[in-house]
Amino acid sequence: MAEHALHRHVVLAGFMGSGKTTLGRDVARRLGRSFLDADKVIEERTGRKIAEIFATDGEAAFRELETRTIRSLLDSRSNTVIALGGGAVVQPATREALREAFVVHVPVDVGVAWTRVRNSDRPLARDEAMFRQLFAERAPLYAEVADAHADDVDGVILAAAGIHHEEGALDKLGDLVHGSGPVVVVTDENVWPHYVDRVTASLGDRLVHAYVLEPGEASKSHQVLDRLWNALRIDRGGTIVAIGGGCVTDVAGFVAATYLRGVSWVSVPTSLVGQVDAAIGGKTAIDIAGGKNLIGSFHWPSRVVIDEGALATLPERERRQGEAELVKTEILANRTLGVRGAAAYKAGICLQDPFDHGPRRWLNLGHTFAHALEAAAGFELTHGDAVALGLLAALRISGRDTKVVEERLNPQPVSVDIDRAFEALLRDKKSLGGAINLVLLGPDGPIVEPRPAELVRAELARLIA
Ligand SMILES: NC(=O)c1ccc[n+]([C@@H]2O[C@H](COP(=O)([O-])OP(=O)(O)OC[C@H]3O[C@@H](n4cnc5c(N)ncnc54)[C@H](O)[C@@H]3O)[C@@H](O)[C@H]2O)c1
Image (cartoon, rainbow, N blue to C red; front, side, top):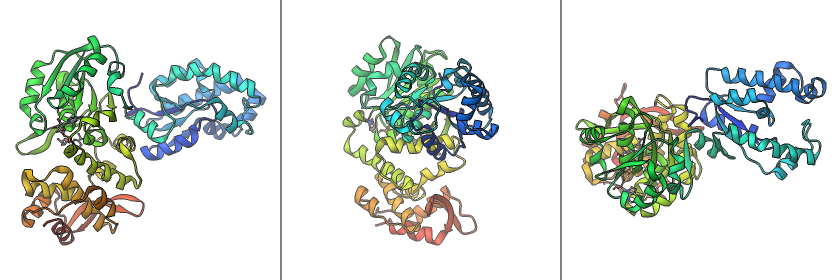
């Protein structure tokens, strides 16, 4: 079974009338991939309608042609999103070929499907009793090929990124951690007491040991890495399960990336920052004296388990940190998202740009200003409060209303030295010919564009008390 679709085609399979084509087109747009409708490709290549091929050549001949076509689509080197015809899974050869892809089954109620297709020209949708029988026959075949099940765009994208979002999922870790190999948990002293019983019960005999770290940034250090590397007793069949906020998932992910040249890891974010941001996209890191997150690696988790129920024990102050990233994501997406939608938004961008060469930079909206203020303020300013201020500046330079940031995050100007803050900003973002590249909002969405250094400095000054 495929764990995610980072390097694979996303294939949508499901009964006729499940909406695969519309869904596939939207998913492809969000992932920056091309969309292929297998039935359409057959019609284009043969110059004949599916109904006509069925009527003249018969179903068996059509299925042969369909298998060949799907195989050729799966052979394409660039990753795409493919919607299959409803009956494609009937052919064993097609099911075999699909093993190479990430297959999402799009479920549909049989009655709903019937009302959608009964007046179409689909050859197998002429009689309701036959339609219902076919539905029952095919259900196990969809189950056989499916790596995941989803019936909306965010759901498909979450699945494609390996993200499982479900209230109460913490109790299902035993099933959600792939395979049956040993598991070590990495967590922190604040989180573990809340969840030790549930996690232990869920992982059962698979749980070898839990490493409980000091909470916060202090654990993103080479000393903690060294301790974990030396303490770990798993082989490459084992999995590291990180349960905690962004600090825990960052350091545990980096241990997973480096131990035995890379072992599988599962990220279980318990903070809002983690659920909408840090645990998603495969960036792992530790800090060094020279700066935060300077040592790290891209190591995509085999699964991310988001249980919003875990936020119940998160202190309000920490929730506020995540709220800033959530508002940032909603501004980028230009709609209300909540945790599930924000996780899907980030996942879509990271699947599109796993190594941070393109659209992933959009996620830094407001962060150029935030980092500068944080550097000048030392530890007095939290990252979330700095991001809230940074968003104000990004929105103002983009000529946008700042109401959403003011209402949701209530940012307060911070007392720091403007020269120090601007110096930090220039260290972070080199000024090229008197201009500084910023993530901004253009008419059609996020853009990265240069703005004059004087303007950037003036906007930075407005954030300072
Ligand atoms: N890898 C990435 O893509 C990425 C993205 C954004 C941020 N980050 C990193 O994430 C870190 C910040 O993440 P964070 O804010 O989650 O920090 P964190 O891990 O320090 O968690 C914040 C605090 O909340 C506590 N906590 C977490 N979940 C809890 C729960 N359910 N109940 C009770 N207490 C809980 C933690 O013990 C900690 O004290 C930074 O180091 C940042 O660099 C990484």
